[in-house]
Length: 269
Image 1 (cartoon, one colour):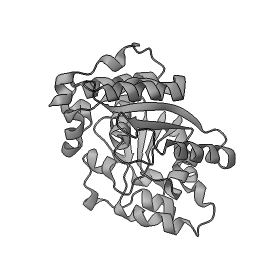
Image 2: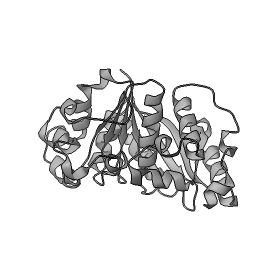
Image 3: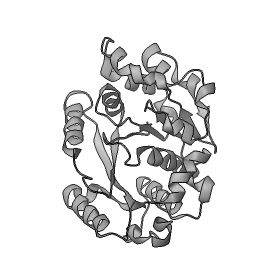
């Protein structure tokens, strides 16, 4: 069985969906079979990959609540070996519906167990909360990737997420580990970015990825065109950094100074 990585942070706007889309693309670009599960009711990963949410039939809500076979909800994406289980607004009510269901914390794990051996990586784009959906994601995962933005209060509330991860590990998923901490939205023109990077590395030690994702207009624009950054602007710094992140996760060597590769001009435009 391959890795099941939950991309998780209860704070919104930290780059979870951007990371889910582009990490998934570059892992598939490297020849791995990848499934992205859009587990956020906002369905931004779904629309960000060019899927029309108004024309979908079954999605992750049907898998989670109605026991629909996950294989029947998958959508083929822009390159071979990259597939998506889409989300929908219906998932908003799933938190309440799950309360009365048997083994409510294991619903996603059970569904993914049917197909997990078919993929090298399953990425779960988790919602910005610590409710039952996120608990399901952490229970199903083998590891968790935590994006942290290089801004004020970056580490605020992170203790709650770590507490939740530890509780899930103790009670629901003893195999769960931290895949790594990913620094995002770095603006190298400011002292703040360097301070947050240093503080995060002091706190998480070697769990922090060498790759740092810059603040980039190209990364912000790409979802509007329904494309991963490689298909929108493969020469951009954002494309380079997500390619490096995929290499790190695949265990390939990455330059020690990769976080210095951001271009001030791009962060300013």
